[in-house]
Image 1 (cartoon, one colour):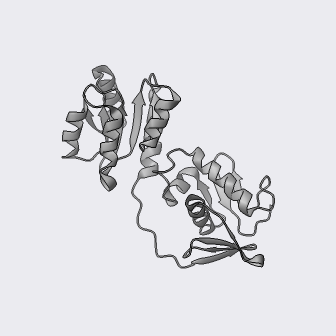
Image 2: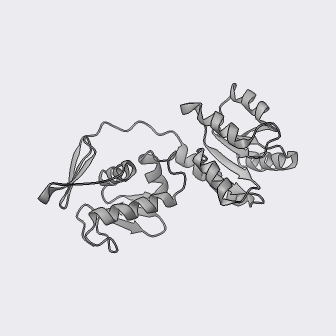
Image 3: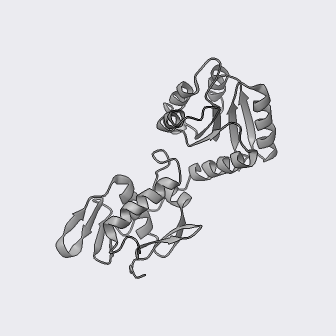
Length: 239
């Protein structure tokens, strides 16, 4: 497999060259563009694996370029916004348009590299999953019907109201009992990258799931936290 390619779209030549030299030295292939027009032209010839995008471009606002990228559908690469804008409104605007991460200038190059690797790992193509064999999975008093996307409390036949993302996360975990899953694993396996770009979103969903299925959400038996790593599902539910 060849080196992954990063496109750097930045109008500041000094910053652009610094990023290209640093990331190129880490083994990545590099594409550079000083404005939106040159980047759009290059995208017709080569799709990068990730785009580092400055918002304040001279000819094309970065958010407009993001909308153009996201309009390409499956051909749209992940995006890390790099900008001097630090307000919550600027950050929210980028995330709403589908940014996968956001880092403000000035930044530490080591932190940028960590974020680049995390986004690439999270968005890497995965082999197709095998056809499911267990469409109905029982744990404790619960029955997960994966074909109908329903979670039922068997004793009273009560159906639990789960969001689509909560159901996907629970489905991923019950199919992998007693297996430690990192937040990145869950983001990938539950196909939540576009909707939830940051790992903390997983923690919020897990908290909500625990309130719905655990006897005592503060001392969970089914979905246990593995400190510093992620989560593990215990079908027995015993603490």
